[in-house]
Image 1 (tube, helix red, strand yellow):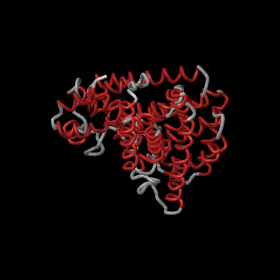
Image 2 (image 1 turned 120 degrees about the horizontal axis):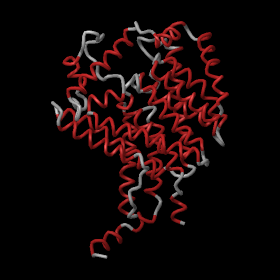
Image 3 (image 1 turned 90 degrees about the vertical axis):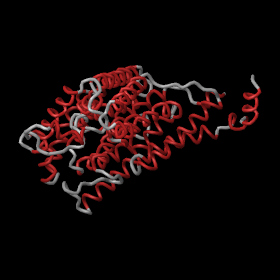
Image 4 (image 1 turned 60 degrees about the horizontal axis):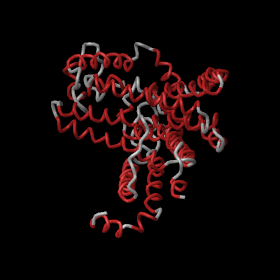
Length: 398
């Protein structure tokens, strides 16, 4: 050992042998899971604390960086994004927008700190925080009279973010109810509030996502449970206010202006891909360049994004980035199915599969992968089953 290494070892024996960094990192990640549904600023501050603890543990304990398999396509996707940013017509705008790539670090953090039974506890934290946020959203709709022009947003700043997070939490609660070994009563109690909260945001893509998640979970448990879906739909039509039923029945109305605009956006995106197939128009460049590719069928003169995850990625970052992202999706789904089939804690795998299914379904109508809170929650949830399969740090030290 060199003199410098010896000096470091002598200076840090207490930190290296104490559980303080471990506890701080664990609490910070749990804090991220809860705070995401209330404040992105607090969540990202806690994420920074967790990253600092993780790096310190890597140095002090000389740990290897370990990640689930799906993290590597995410890393490649990040590299493809930076290449696209370099070729953007406004490189600095695209590079600044690419700072969101740092949120991918939530994967190694959850994998490192949320091990064993802690993963199930994380689900409880997320569901509980989601129930609180959902209750406030229902209060906004029922008492403060929020409507489609002023939509319920719960404890968050935007109704789309709120509805997306509640959609994921609803899937987690249903997964716990169907596959959980404990806390099933709590999941059953909060599910009605979560379902109502998704509805009163008037956000159609998250209702579609929630239905897809429920259908997947029912199929994993027992196909006969599919009978619940038409019954639930009939109850909704019977008791929901007319403005809500009209909003959701408009999903199939091709004359609806928002539906027509979404079809037009797909055409605009296709033109962008055709013009820039390899690197796209650049991250955060769809809005400033939208008018250059807008066709006569467009309803809105400008759109901030293309309301479709695959098309947005292809248009912004190019077809290679889209292929990498699709690889990430495939690896996540394959590995989660393997975890589910192995047995063990099937609830975690089922919850993660429900989160992916709902995100993919909703992502056909909304660019949810670009929403920081949504992205962080999704990555956190899909990492939990893989972290749960690892031995606890206490077991490793004993």
